[in-house]
Length: 110
Length: 114
Image 1: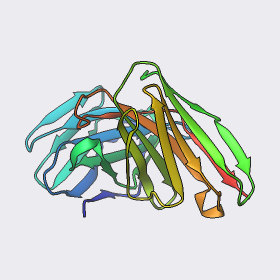
Image 2 (image 1 turned 30 degrees about the horizontal axis):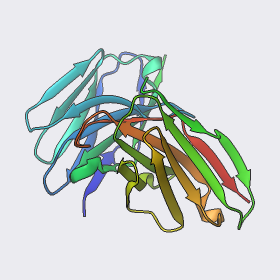
Image 3 (image 1 turned 45 degrees about the horizontal axis):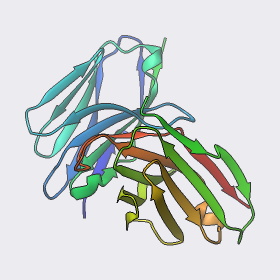
């Protein structure tokens, strides 16, 4: 059974304080590792897809990396508007069925 | 914007009543999905569709049925709602032709079963 575990459950940062979120996965035949951002009361918003170990992708203050067992979402010099829940998901079967982690709630204080 | 709308956005219903949630997309995407999101469980797949009249079960399909008679609409039905089905329901689509690509989510429907 595919499993995705995110840590920490919650993270509080000061504005400008860089950090990383972790996503550990156990998937037979990874077909993609996906990162999403979710704001309260809204649907998840797609951020990145990573397909192979060593791959990295960046968007503004966010950078996602992938190893054979983990993915990291690095946040550089965060701002209060980066506060949200960050979700990761693994795709390990056909038809695009994703297995989601429970998310990391990020709060950035000014 | 993936062109996904969900209706209703909020619904309160009583235990034992039937409920249908609608997901509508405007861009002829082949793959559509229904998830529920609950505290402590994250997002879990209920059902998915890979074409008109082609659907299959996800990990939490008990108590739910789906139908897709047109490409643009994917309906989720709770035949007899229970309090355990109180949740936020999200519809998603993928742009890919094989389904193995990122999914884009609708705004969600908050369902309360009393």
